[in-house]
Length: 47
Image 1 (cartoon, rainbow, N blue to C red):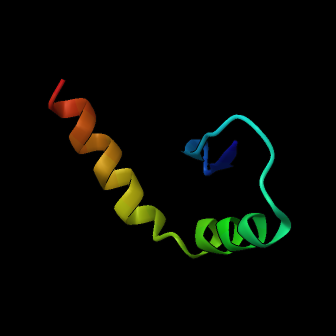
Image 2 (tube, rainbow, N blue to C red):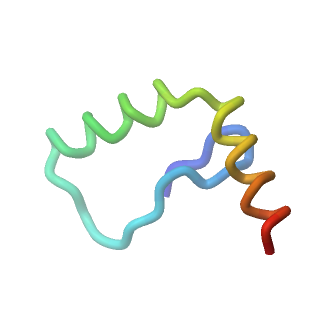
């Protein structure tokens, strides 16, 4: 599981190969958290 700013941005059971893990960490670091928060808010508002 990867959590950024108290938001889970990735969750998957099991191990990943090293290259996939490195790519995943890079992508998680590169996320625009303003966009993520807006998406979370929109999803909550639509429930």
